Length: 130
Image (tube, one colour):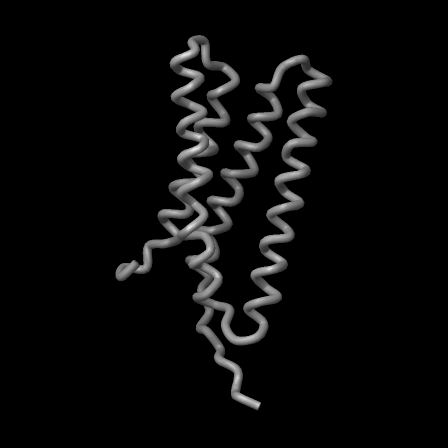
């Protein structure tokens, strides 16, 4: 990470997962469906490392632990509600495609927010020892 590109790697991985989820519902062949699910899995697995390196740029010291716990808790809530939304939309429409589109839009929003955070960077403030 010498070039400080972790935001780009995070956003790129999220965009890969979003694209895979967006198109997986419309896949006509088994091979296409498997390839798209592989893209989703690769995107979701590969964003984690660069993502967890990002908060260290603007959070340090004691507040870092509680901030990282908040980020983790918020992510867990997102996991629950995304599955609930997919199920609710599938029940109403009879297809999983609409639910996948909603989650793909959420991943797209996450990528945009990561890139926006990169543009709005503030310097790290190190607290004085007490």
